[in-house]
Amino acid sequence: MANATLTPRRSQLTKGKLPNWAMWAVLAGALILGAAVAALVGFSIISWAIFSAVFFIIAGTAVTGVAEGGRKARNRLALFLIYGAFIVALLPLLSVIWTVLERGVPGLSYNFLFTSMNGVTGAIDNESVAEGTPVLGGAYHAIVGTLQITLWATLISVPIGLLAAVYLVEYSTGGSLARAITFFVDVMTGIPSIVAGLFAAALFGQLFGPGTRTGFVAAVALSVLMIPVVVRSTEEMLKIVPNELREAAYALGVRKWRTITKVVVPTAISGIASGVTLAIARVIGETAPILVTAGFASSINWNVFGDWMSTLPTFIYYQILTPTSPTATDPSTQRAWAAALVLIIMVMLLNLVARLIARLFAPKTSR
Amino acid sequence: MSKRIDVKDLNVYYSKFLAVEDVNINIEARSVTAFIGPSGCGKSTFLRTLNRMHEVIPGARVEGEVLLDGDNLYDSAVDPVTVRSQIGMVFQRPNPFPTMSIRDNVLAGVKLNNRRISKSDADALVEKSLRGANLWNEVKDRLARPGSGLSGGQQQRLCIARAIAVSPEVILMDEPCSALDPISTLAIEDLINDLKSEYTVVIVTHNMQQAARVSEKTAFFNIAGTGKPGKLIEYGNTTDIFNVPSEKATEDYVSGRFG
Image 1 (cartoon, chains in turn purple, green):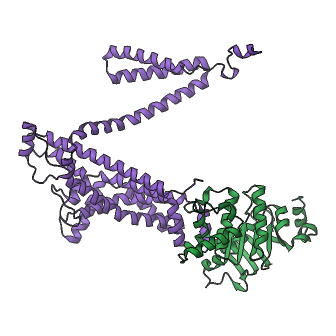
Image 2: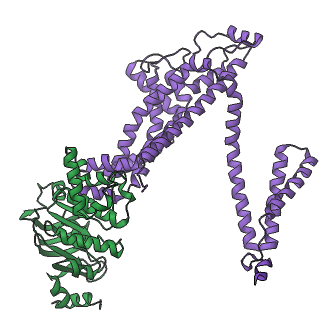
Image 3: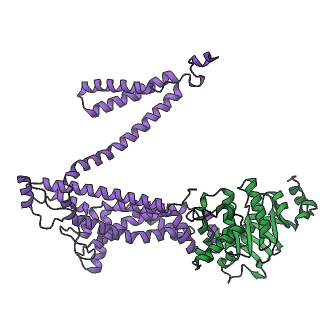
């Protein structure tokens, strides 16, 4: 009786199917063939990868078509194309992160993070290039400016955006006011950032005299860009709060605004938080509106209501465009890349914070 | 506690569409009244007019009077919030607040209205309400856990506990067992039997056995066809409705020979 189990037998259910290693074999073949063809036209990693990918897609589809039939071949082709598109989409991102890390990490030091450009002159940069002394000067003032301006922009736009979204979802009945708000929010989404900057500069120029440039003007400009994003994302999040929860609260004799503040918004808070983070990430890298509203400073200024301010993007812009030392630009370039790295890290930290908020406030479902 | 409800010549509209036409009904205090009828006949719509919940839907309005112990709910000076705090409601699908613990769900009616309540009073209220909803023994060790972690039947009983924690006069139930299994249904039905000693209970149900089991009075609603308004066909003692109905339509419906 044991004989029957000893004889290996191909399952009827896997008949006509390629074994799992088949695609790996095709991949290996495509890599070898790709290397050979790439060598003919001048070998490089990129040409090798492109030729191998093309051979792999053709051969993989053909092998599948012969062994498993047309439907499976089409399935496989679609699968390859989807993975290919994913990889192509991922490459620029990885490339950006890699470049910024490669060039930014050398410039990143305690000195860079906690000193400003105050008193750093071309002579000092020339010296550090000529004699190899450490690069002086840093982005502390720009980090302070970025945090301050973004914080104020958030303080302005989150209440306005949140309340507008609450009106649209909870109070409006699709009347002309709601339609107008939705329309203008859509228009605002498309406003070029420099126009928002000019608007804020002109507004404060009218109110406080021409040439009024402070961090707060920049914050107003950024909030013009942030508000539509906050309204849109909050609106979507409020819409997906089930109506049953509102009705449950009403049935307990709870007033409408209390239902909104205690039931609807808390239920949607995690989505709202990530929407706000996305809005912040959208404006934290803005350069043009900052230049026309906050000017440029090389020393530390904590006061958003007085004097010019720098942010990381404007710092990068000036370091590249007008290096501190026109003859030895390396220290300025290094500072610009380090500032870019700091900016990316700030956005990443923001995302982490948003995730944390989402985790903390999310509706609890565990048993 | 518990008040009677008298409805006089009530028409319910969604914008221009007449959904329920000319209902007259007297619901006794401390009794269980069941509304039965085919889908779309307006029994849920009518139930929601009894605590002005239908107003949540834009365009919904009523004509006629609903009297709670003689006071008209639809008097222009009446605040719907006052009405709803006296007439509680349990919905078809259990809907505990997902951001709140079991304890906070029970206290929701108090806390969401920002009424101050001492910790000992709150504890007492939570225990009393959960005992009233036959749920205390199952959840007393995990009051701080989220309410959405309970089973469907437990969630529904939690919603009932939440409704009775604000000590209403009347409890409306809109098909409270339609999403539940037979054992949970039995638990809810037992609970309804207990509730009627203190509250006026009105229940909409698709399950005729359930109406026969829990209610003293039954109202049969029917609809002449799509687009026509729903009407109250017959209202009487449950035993009469199921055994000797006076209308042909009622007899057809309760005996399963519908149409």
